[in-house]
Image (cartoon, rainbow, N blue to C red; front, side, top):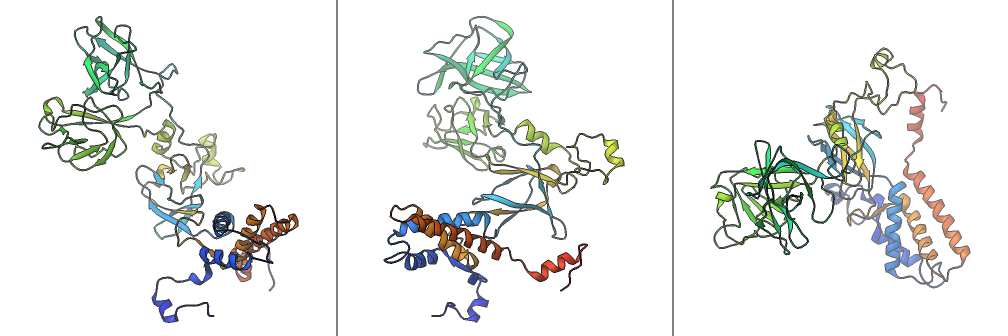
Length: 465
């Protein structure tokens, strides 16, 4: 029976070129069940589902260090200097910058910076707490602070000796507004259902006193980026139009340009924790309805709404991406610049990863992002990476050079997990697994004697052939 199932004409007119070098995982499983499993065979009995599991594990393990890596992705580095890792990313092999001629230049990872987690707002004394200076008026539930405070959000607990609070009625921030870099807050009562009502009045008048703010759940107050949308009284509405009460904020065209899904709404008209789901040019859809339950609420009391983004860069990353990096001067090395200038190219112990101008990067595994140095902004970057070969049905295939290694890996895995297989059989399969994997690696390394000879000709040693 012929192995080729299409004519030469169909092959060259099609788009599946070079596929003859691969064997599908489905065929490997079928052939393993036919040849290795059965009476008077190495594995007398095995379920197909078990073989399929070990076949997928074998493909993943071979993909990591034996099979060739075909995965690659190209992007233009945006102003944010960040690249999202591919969906099926496991590890990288190369990160390269492309010049105007299409030639790739290596970019080296840096070990001298990172994007650490910011655990909370920190005061100058080192304590993790949020405090602000404001003026208390016993006749008003509104407190005017001395400057802008973006981290004070609706729903936060307010603590001060002259602000009443108890276990039943917790005093919280009910509204915030910022005008001319001065933040003003209103305080009230947090109800059991999560809504906020009833103005709370301070018990005494105090000028420029320190007021503390905490999260209701006791967690640390995290730094935030606030996007305050302000518009005229006739252009900002909540609740939708007509008779439909929905989780909707409507505004003039373009006012929601900085708002993105995942942000939170800090406003008295919505419960604490309301999240943005979708954004259009004139609407923001959130995951809860307005507290008031009204439709198209009068905009006279709704001219400003605060959207909160908790995805804040650490100070380490902010300084790294904003700095002008000159790798040729290698600021990473604590050496006087005069010495570097006079001995450039002549120093011993120079680190090649910093003695180049291609740029640098580091990978934040937690956020799934690659962070690039500032000199790579706008550059074309290519990421060569490794996957496990199990992302899609088309990827679940094995090069014919590694087909035997797949069979031996599956056989060893299936046999080692059973009780009725003699130990000497398991040890034999283990040795065969090792030998076939080594053979596959040598074959896939694609070493050609003529190419090696040509490389060595350029070295100091002459090769006769």
